[in-house]
Amino acid sequence: MTAGATCAKLAPMSSYPYADRYPVLRGMPDEGRDRETVLAELREMATEEDSFWRTGKASGSFYCGDMEHYAFMGEAFGLYGHMNALQRDVCPSATRFEGEIIAMGLDLFNATAIPGGDPVGMITSGGSGSILHAVLAYREQAVAARGVTRPNFIKPETGHPAFDKACHLLGVELRVAPIDPLTAQVDVAAMEALIDDQTIAMMGSASNYGYGTIDPIAELGQIALAHGVGLHVDGCLGGFILPFGEQLGYPVPAFDFRVPGVTTISADTHKYGYGLKGTSLLLFRERALRNGQYFFQTQWSGGKYCSPGIDGSRSSGLLASTWAGMVAMGRSGYLRYAREIFATAAAMQDAVRSHPELQMIGDPTYLFAFTSDRFDIYHVNDSLRRSGWRMNGLQYPNAIHLAVTRPQTQPGVVEAWVADLATAVEYAVANADKPAKSSGIYGGVSGGWSEQADDFIRGIMGDMLDQHQGLPPR
Ligand SMILES: *Cc1c(COP(=O)(O)O)cnc(C)c1O
Image 1 (cartoon, rainbow, N blue to C red):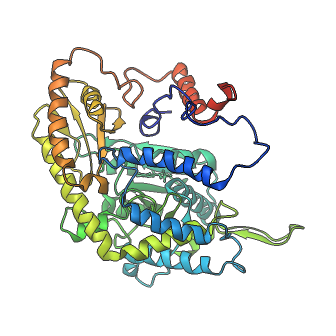
Image 2: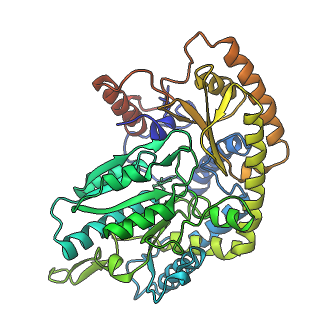
Image 3: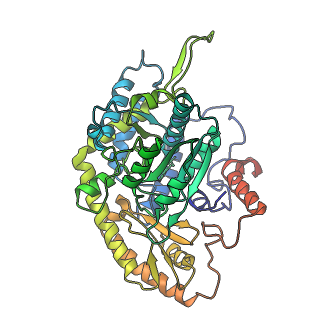
């Protein structure tokens, strides 16, 4: 297990949140409370928590940042949240929402470029869900068509841990190819060398989470075709912003269905699609690949059962709000947001490049990562944290990144970044011989991983799930 992406977000909590303010529930209350006080409590917490990222100093996570857009999607959710998208006889609108979200995605990723194609899609609960269903589809196809018995899947080291998780859950061996440390793109020859007759598919990122770089998708497509294996493009993060960067003239190579060999694409509507959390798109070049992972049980006494993916009941509210958000944005809305985000990211990167002590990793666009050969970059992180920034921590090598989102495009944020980064570099230079404070818990790991470290991670998960157990009732 690595401590990077996920655990960076999980600084251990010192106390149960809000225990000083609200009663702590240790069980089901006997009497219900009136809705207004419940809502007042929720509003208070949400307003406080929103006030942090609204400064523009938080990396990623809050992609849209437009409270009116959030409220609009919340209203759409409210109309359909109680409806079950699994039961289309009573919720026919779900078919409309899902079909049109998929159609918008296929259009965005140029599915029309597939000669004589029959491209299709599905909607999942998030990026991990899309990745899980892609790996499942490849496994089922390889078993059925090629009699594969020991399936393996190949990813660049920078591929998201959701691929590790999917392979773990689905009994697929994961093979990992190294990246070129200068470009932070995968070594294509190393990917090819890992292919054998049990390989079901491989993946490339557009872009990857850590460095924001785009793997050489066209070259990966060529080797996928040559070896008869699938190629998944993970556009979970970049899928809804890179096409608009391309349109704006930024150096974004084609990564979608225009590229021969690309067989599936994931793109998160709940990231730069600016939707509410809980949906992602998975698109397939061919219908048969998707259909192979359907589940159905027609013999059950409870009736004939089928579901397109791993979820059973699903909220129509998520489909309705995602649909509403995309329809309200349109291409012009996405383009406008992308223009602001790419310009802001370029200005923030210029600030990084102006410091000879800092090194940008690879050739990034809307998300950039940097390190230092003069000091532990976590010194810079320590100082940025004091200035109110929440960066994401990386390791091997220690680095920090910022995913630029709309909150950073507000007036004054770039100026604050320029000033706070200069302060942080000065601080790092002055403290270079001391250990950095944030590297231990924030992603950077000095030394190897150990069993104690595994226990540490279990402790962090316990902090998320079990903390209420230690508290007396009020
Ligand atoms: C966020 C992300 C994922 C996983 O998506 P979740 O929605 O968190 O499950 C996969 N790949 C990349 C590149 C991501 O940034």
